[in-house]
Image 1 (cartoon, rainbow, N blue to C red):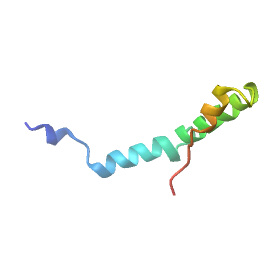
Image 2: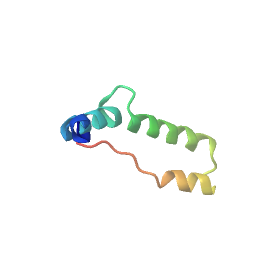
Image 3: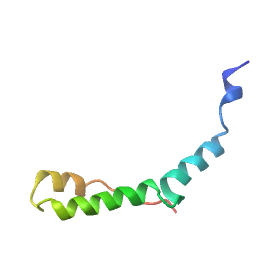
Image 4: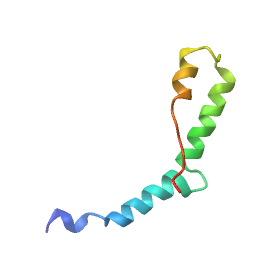
Length: 62
């Protein structure tokens, strides 16, 4: 039995990734952006933490 027999096809793996990160109702991108929004409400705009978090970009693929 070869290892390649148990690997999911590339398209299946990409579909699973895209559903988790972009398409699900509780997807990673929306959750990350919500977390950033929350952090912006509790951090001072001049703090190093605020500046570090503001540089992180999360966007959905089209």
